[in-house]
Image (cartoon, rainbow, N blue to C red):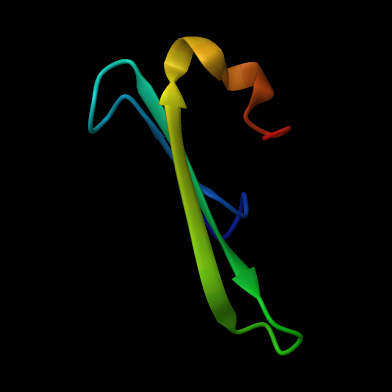
Length: 52
């Protein structure tokens, strides 16, 4: 997650589901919030993950 800036789960917990998660940091670099979304893998192919 530190290298890419987000966490990724492509079917590891639930087949056919892709999940992305990331945190929001304040001006000092501390994590202050997080968001995670999951979608059907067919709607978020690997090529669109950086865009998301």
